[in-house]
Image 1: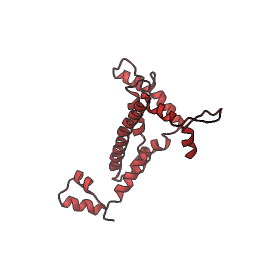
Image 2: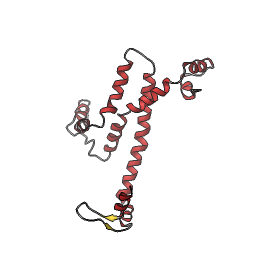
Image 3: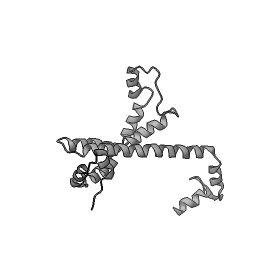
Image 4: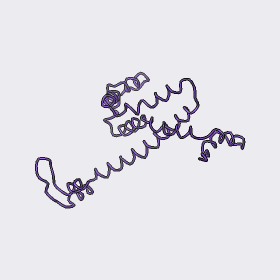
Length: 178
């Protein structure tokens, strides 16, 4: 960490020795308008993708809370994108799907969209495509929500139901006395 801090105060490329320049790099960074635009886009991405991912994870956890014969399959199917989502093969697959001649544009053409969209190349659609790809990997959060929801004793739900609380209020007010 200290060497990174030192290099940030230097003019340095891998082929020559670092030359100390003080705060020149930071002044250049903070005077560049691209830096602030990048920070804005990063915050926008985080403020949209994180709540959406958590909302979808909670929704799926609530759906998988009730057991059935296919519950184990559903849990695995929803968790699988989180496991394989960061692989190179999946990245190439997504890149090809969202290309101008990709599957997404071909499917939309069937439904009447005439002009193909460069999903990752257009500044208006690229951020939303990246948000979609981030939200798609909600399996780990879903498992955490699901295990937490399973820890709530059924007696609490029964007591809340007897007291007249509906499903939504039971969800909001459920507390484990552990």
